[in-house]
Length: 264
Length: 330
Image (cartoon, rainbow over the protein chains, first blue to last red):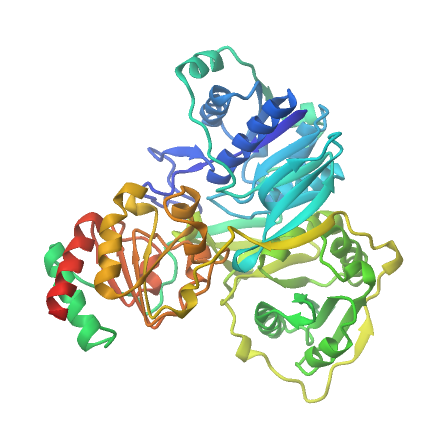
């Protein structure tokens, strides 16, 4: 089975986030980047399905130069090769512009299955995989918590997460796009051997011209959304912050919970 | 030309989801802001006459009903096939959806099919000299973006749960007319076979009945570090809950999960330790009477919903708190 896994490199949200001077995005200097969390699970799902079916995984990502590091990591855990949509014209896209570009890249090969994460941890549109499926004319399932290939490889039984702790079980024909939810599996770590092998694997760089796309169809120019500012969220009344060392904070909290909130 | 606002409602087995009323509230507010007429609502399903009549009591210009056996069970293929021609023909400026696990599954695909813009998970909007600025959370709720829509044509916008108030929906002076949605229902076919629905993770602990919940997040650092949490829960007589990363890492079983994909709780006291407060968690617990947050990151969004906050290492604060509670209780 030929499987493509689309991954995104995103800022590590555990890091200290600073807004850049023009106020429209984060200051990316010294900002650590990681593979998007649900995309790591998508990659693991792709690798394990490829192992079961004797296939291979091609990892695909759109982004600037730094994205090579994410692709190398994916190659180190077992992807066979990588495709990097690397051109400034691709950047700053909304789900529609990015989905369009990824679909054009995937259409150059023949895949039986495309996996993506369910949502990016930066802008979080949660739509790129579904748009991509629409562009390819394939069925899709969002928020996937289980994949079982049917005998014959023409369809798959897919578990889709719903609200309130319920799952829906559906069957989709293949090829399809499955947007994987975090927690579906246990992503593997790269071995030293894998890291060494990754250095020799191919990362193909492609631009809009290779895909027959004009710059106004993709990236910021091809998007309907424009981020005009990022800032700390509006807070409610805000919490009463308790100061001091741990012991003082604990004592203050117990006093407040007893006498103010009256819940102890 | 006058602006047009539509709102697509979510229902399951004839029950209108609470988020649908919030979406109507958002659509009414948006229509007023744009100087548009009253919004038009769309309902999809089978046998929804009574539901449509209930919806029509709200201040709406019309209720459009797509009633077909192929829409009885939700599938993205069915919903997109029913909605796309109608949206293309009427060309509303905005179509409002509740931001739910169902809408996120099909609305991006609908945007792609219609050639519309896609603006997911907004929490509000403000007018600016340059048109509307939409607010939406980014970076797991640690930041908020203001987003402008550019270009021409319909935009599909989904509103986050709780961002607009369901009880703020305006009722109409007289019922809105109910008409069939202008689409070809014969062309509506599901694109997936729905085999069934099951409880995720088997047997279940009911956290909704707990008066006090100690909830633990990624910050606890591992299953082997859970002892101090158990001690605190014991001292408080509390149940233990968790945010999603704890469950995904296997540190606690899935029936302890609180949030949009877990249980929704509203205890008297909710103590969140090492939980940053992604929106998916907040929707499951912000109804708690008193919320305490302990987190090492002063910028963690959990502090925006908390009543009391402690910035510190939970591995120090939690044992200190356990000791203080034991002392207070004698």
